[in-house]
Image (cartoon, rainbow, N blue to C red; front, side):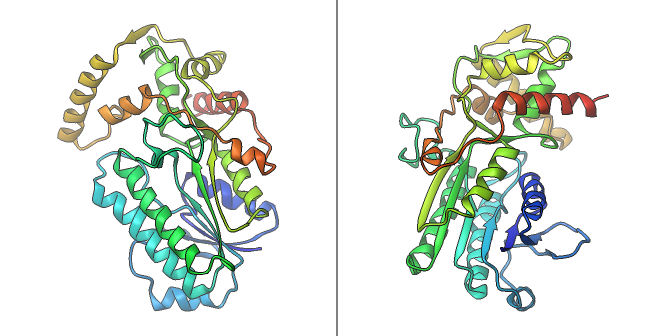
Length: 322
């Protein structure tokens, strides 16, 4: 297939492009960073689609668009930043899809569109996001669904809702946990006796490639690794690797929020992300229990085990910390 990938230079994008090429697809990439390679186009999708980019890409008949471009990280980002990179970028991407006549789209979203208070764990859960990232990603989903409904006979749309994505070269949630467990006196918040949905980057890429051959109308899938682990089980997998230790200090959530407030204030003063905020503590201590049974029902079989991928990332962490 001829595939156009937006957000190709992000964490998932780099893995995905490599695998698509390995699977003999003809891959074209868009991102806003400076990269010097063939079939790469530097372009900021949060801005109006230019005539120039439309003309260049208009010469190619694409089979599929995979939309990864989104706001990255959470440090010092305001609602306007999320809106620009999640909503405006999606709006302009859809305009590009129309110009190029692309009829099949895979759009990345997030389980954050559900918020944290759902009782139902499947794709049937209520959509009640409770942070700017989740709410703007839901707006993005609705824009793509509106595009799909313009021609539901010819248009094909798959929306993927991954949970926390982890793996080598990612310096977000899982990295922070590894960093804590690598200290002389590891600290944890709460008892960890709750589900934390997550998905290895290799698995979300494999799911994406699986979906390329499963286009059928509008499909929405949660993407999480199985078995659905409790945080204390993830910590157990990590601490089986020499170099990591189980938490020696466990502090209550209320005290952790106080610490988070202090770090936020100090981060603001020195204009540097110190890794600890109340929002990150909240996300760390909240259950995020979402299930991906729908994917299994359409034939997807998880390729990589959760334990293996968590421990693989732990080994990678040690290798770069030498």
